Amino acid sequence: MVDVARVDSGAQARAMHGLAEAGGEFPVGDGLFALRFPASWPGLYRASFGGQSTEGAARLNSTLVLPDPFLGTGYTKYAPAAVPEYWMELSEIPVDAELWHMAEDGGEGYEQALARYAGIHSGWRSFPAARERGLVPGGAAAVPAGSVPRGAFVTLQGASYPADFGPDAGSLTAYRTAEDGSVMARKAELGLTAAGRHAWRVEAPKAEIEQLAEETRRIGVQAQLGS
Image 1 (cartoon, rainbow, N blue to C red):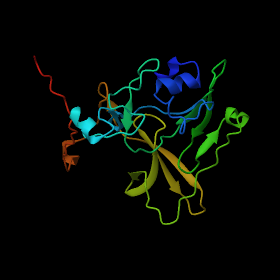
Image 2: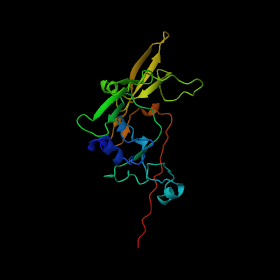
Image 3: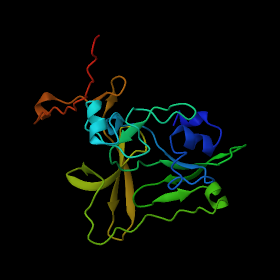
Image 4: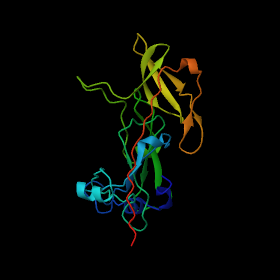
């Protein structure tokens, strides 16, 4: 959201992110709603190098086909300045994520936090600014009957529990439901130590390592032709 912070109104934010022409999904006059959370897991983000068709993606040696407003160039439309753009794979919302609103015409206090995500069992908790705008979120939504369990799970002392990412980088919040229906939460550190930009590491005794696996992701590079 560093790029968004340079604007002075919701209209400017919408324009800089290539949404000015998407009036059906981002109506003029509504400003812009933004979901903000720490970008603590860089593996979730990919530069949007691809195309709006398979042919366009192939020209960049990519298989990523993206819908509007993505251009496939890694940047938004130039209005008034191109902003770096990323494509994010499906992920759960982390604890302490916040929903913000940027008023259409700007002005003093145009940017207001509306709600904070308190976890899968509590849902969103609204701030006074949301009530002032008539936007009061409800609690956690009921799980549809017959749905498949999804989301993060963590194993503690041999038992598996549902969990949320956060609230801090490198941590999870695990939940346990008691017999009376009450839910208890426990913050669980993932045991990762920062080892440079976009890198973490953990140390463990060699005797405890049962399996080694390497995961790689191919990055396409367009060949440069000489004259």
